[in-house]
Figure 1 (cartoon, rainbow over the protein chains, first blue to last red):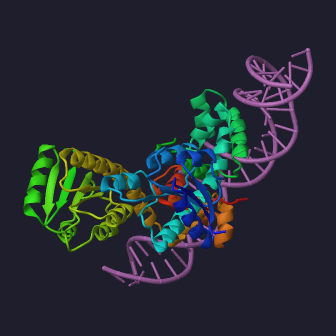
Figure 2: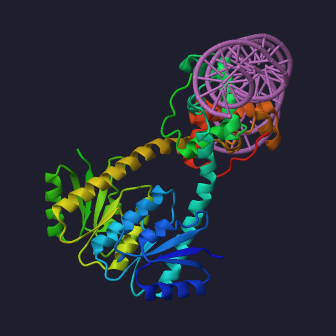
Length: 210
Length: 210
DNA sequence: CCGCATGTTGTCCCAAATGACAATAGAAAA
DNA sequence: TTTTCTATTGTCATTTGGGACAACATGCGG
């Protein structure tokens, strides 16, 4: 399986035409009559896929679908297909994060190329997500106190510093720290800091320590 | 000063018209008759700025100018201005990284909005760059051996591990490690790891340690 | 030949982190 | 009420990291 393509178009003939073309090219295909329809049958995340969206569909504009999807935690790339698009709409769509923008009639070449790229993009996104999601889950599993310790520790504070900052004994911090390491499933401070950076829990804050 | 705008257009009347409009809006302005001209008089990096590029200029296509600039380490956003653009060209330009795409005649509102956005973007880029550049410089100042130690240390290896990996004494690693910390100008391992992550020196490699 | 940078290694001591066993107290849930 | 979770603190021994002195070898340019 090379990937999954979700076709959204209210024109049945276009849908079936596309479906046939893409299935022949080796893709899994699902069709929807509207953007809402797509949102309802939320595609299984985790498989590299993309959405082929006819901009003519009335219920949800492209950008809106985009933001709706990302709210749901999805990063599926969207390829817009338009009949007679105007420049401003095109610019808006692409700047809003469309992965590509095609005009009808779509040449098979362009279509397949765009889809290949989009699915490749999503593959990368999925890989990233599958790495970061568990980390976020681990952080979510920390208690409030543990999170405080976590934040200070990954900034290079020593147990003593943290103890002073949080108003308790060094020994206490030590205990929390151990639990943090366990829950985050890391063995070393370096790994902990790496995770924090990747999650963005350290956004621009590398100040002095001692 | 709100920012710097570099206008590239071979049409003198357009240049001066734009220049006047933008100066009135409070921007610093420089004009160029060709993309090459812009590249020659490489704009001073560090000031939030943007390029207003007429796609008609013949010497360098937009995307080419873009890549040429980024080769030179610049991240100036480019706003394309086109007369009668076609969709594919628009799509290509924006996907290639254009910050915005305007069509003539450009309304003052659109223009100023686009420029404001672009300069804001560049402001962020500049801030980021001014943080990362010195770090890269520090890394470049490491000796080969020091860099080896650096790479292992930020992955969580202990001095003992590194010593074993590089075939020398723990004491030796200790010495290198100290010099690394000095040269990178950090006090703690956490900071060192943060820098490594931000520079991308740790791309997906958080494996076991002990 | 000499100075300098680089890499190497040493000892002594102290600070910091880890791990092994622990215990106590309050709050929330069963 | 009893269990469970969370936060708190303790000691002791060990490992690691960091700082303060160092020394020695090599290779390169002046």
